[in-house]
Length: 217
Image 1 (spheres, one colour):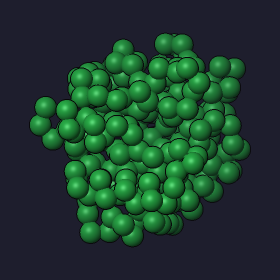
Image 2 (cartoon, rainbow, N blue to C red; image 1 turned 90 degrees about the vertical axis):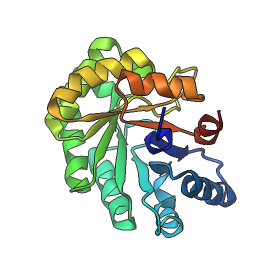
Image 3 (cartoon, rainbow, N blue to C red; image 1 turned 30 degrees about the vertical axis):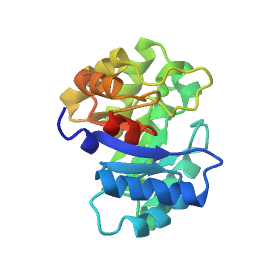
């Protein structure tokens, strides 16, 4: 597949990441001209400086990894990340609220973060490992209603989780694509074959910490 690099959001979200690891991530993103880097909010300014002469997007995560922060906190995080120079925001949905069918809460949670993002694209991380197919579809519908720009499979932080599955990506794509939203597949994408499967299922972008391996295969 041509231009596979332009699907990849080169990701480093580990708690014990070193400054040297982040600098390496930015250098690799430059070298391979990846679509973006995905990092924790504390490092957005560092990424902005490191990637200032490139078109590599700076993506950061909000309410990460559990999604159970108060809405006001998520909105503030998004606003601060925007001020620091983030290009895109990936927020974690409140899984408990989805499972409780507290749909108004879920929608308002996403909407508040989208307002804080302004013109920046907002991706809603559904955490598909923890949801039924019906819940995935409903979470997609709520993301559409709340004005999000993407839905995303996973944080990659669920213990014993699979992460992105092609069947879930397709379900998400079929639900949101008619409304103009895109899908980001993330979690467990560690080789070129899996990456291509996700794209064929409808993924517009791929969150992976294995971007170099995928490109070298």
